[in-house]
Image (cartoon, rainbow, N blue to C red; front, side):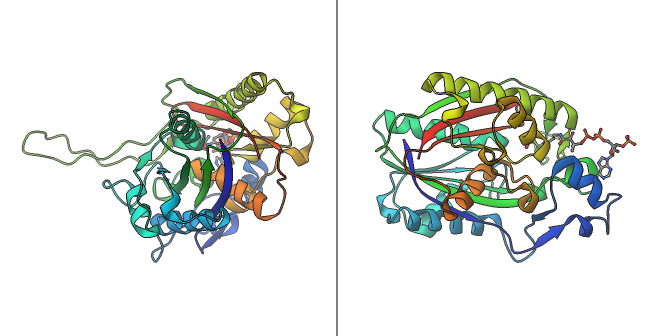
Length: 315
Ligand code: ACO
């Protein structure tokens, strides 16, 4: 499996750390030093995550020089979106005029890797040759804007890739270990048969636990895929990590004993966009001409579940 096109889209509104101090007891110094974030893009009234997902998908198709009718499958990954049903993937399919099966997945922040695994499985089973995978996230609507320890982290955005089966084998490692350190309950309505009306809770997070899990799982997953591919960290051109916190990226870089340039990041401008963060960053790298044919790239992402995964691919 190989990536032959990338695309992305972010909301127009830029929210700086300074702007958060208008309604939150925080400051730029705390946010910058603890997370690396300076600003994030946030969806406001006249935009929605569906538009971002469609734009990112169209860009990726254009970059791959494909028509939407060439697609055999659409996977849209998101934690939450504008619809309970149909799947956002179906809305994207209609908008871009594709004709293939389309479905949503939810693997939280690690979702890009879990979706790559499903795409790889579909290709290996001979069910699909060209797949659009788009991760589109509206995290700022799940965020509790009164909890300063978590709301400063998140931003919105979408990142898309076009995958083809005409590529060398990729290596994937996944894991899930249940934890309640990061969760967000869904709401339920009263019915004639159930009187358990529940308002939906905003995101709850035990930051230190998540931090520890993120560093340990990412280091483990990366090592696993390198072992599977029989390569060392020195052979890898880039480690494209989930943009959760710059200190998490730094800790993994130190553990791997590799140079700064191998760990690109955009969290300072984008915040944490959950599953969209890796394909969003990848699209920036692609547009900046950072990737050359044959480069070994490792994607690694981690988050609620706890779920984590890594994928080693050749560009
Ligand atoms: N502004 C100012 N002060 C704050 C803020 C804020 N926004 N948030 C917390 N503080 C205060 C706390 O109240 C605490 O004050 P106290 O010492 O008087 O009690 C102090 O800062 C230290 O708080 P800690 O929680 O100990 O800070 P820590 O160094 O652990 O950093 C953080 C918190 C940034 C959340 C960190 O734990 C982290 O990044 N964890 C990973 C979480 C993560 O990445 N989540 C993303 C979602 S999931 C995913 O994508 C993996």
